[in-house]
Image (tube, rainbow, N blue to C red; front, top):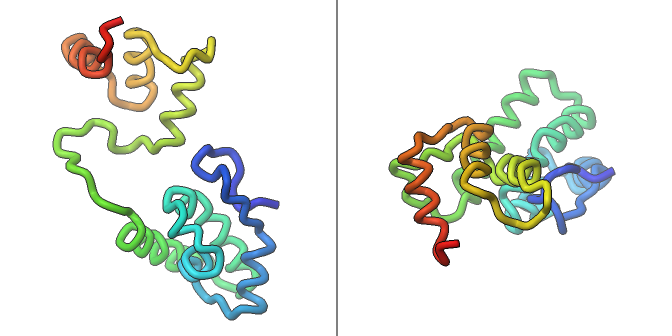
Length: 155
């Protein structure tokens, strides 16, 4: 079974649950960060995919190493911190950004849900609906500004 199914972020990185077990049982991996960064190298290849796989990696390691729920939570938190610190890439200027809690997988899911004709575009109403579904509804002025910034060919 693959570590994580269902997100475009993990496409092309078909790591298996068995690889985590092998790393623990035969390669002396003792932390989720070790598995994601050094054993599979997923953190280097796609940090978003690594974060999406992290809960399952922790579950498997807890099972193999006999971790308590408290230890599993601690390992998860430590791995999250390491991934955020060492594998987040350059930090863009997010001052004034509204899209803070949605991740790329959320955005893609909402986009695909609204783009029923699979044209790869959204109407003004579709953008408003997507923004609302992602948790940051836009006022008419904000929507108009967003559309004017995105619609470079004015169609």
